[in-house]
Amino acid sequence: MTFNVTWAIGGISLAVRSQGTTELVNDVMFAGCESVGGAVNVPMGKQTIQNIKSGSVKEVPFNFDVRCSGLAANTTVPVKVYFEGSSSGDGLLKLTNQGQTGVASGVGIAVTNDKGIKLPFDIARSIKLDWSRSIADGELYRFAGKAKYVPTTGQMAPGRGDATMNFVLNYN
Image 1 (cartoon, rainbow, N blue to C red):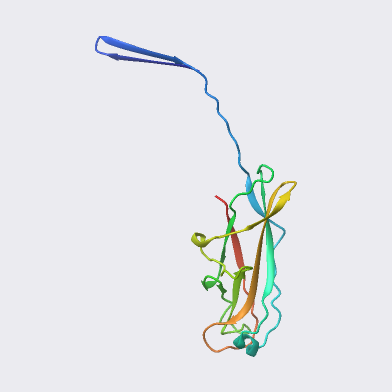
Image 2: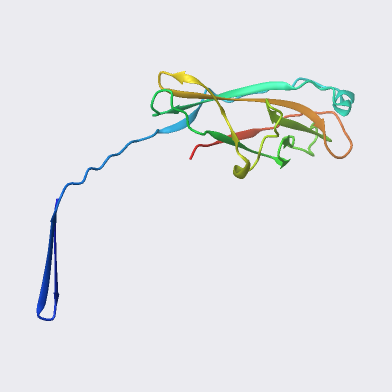
């Protein structure tokens, strides 16, 4: 590369000439992360109001995997996750169609990771995914969680107890 600059001020000129080489290196760390598999359905089963009130409802485990591709072999990055859904706060999902005929009332779904941490519904509180293993096309991370029915406010009444939440990957 050759670089020439000439300054002229009044009757005086100054010329600067330089020559050298520049090497540009582009190391791509990784292309991205994506969910492995389809939607995760968590079959909560039928529960009695008495079991929900007493807290004797069994936790239902669930998990999902995330593959990050484009990494050098056996290289991990900090992959985090947070959740979106109808929630009154971290770790508690509101039931879908709450207040409508046929939908349970006074009940929500508590959601935590396998370490008992309430699932965050805000990017600022994203939680780290656990690295699982290296695979042929990248690195595999796993999220493991638990869900269970819990009492909320108001009178409990029987009905459907469905809820939906989405997860958002954060790996910047």
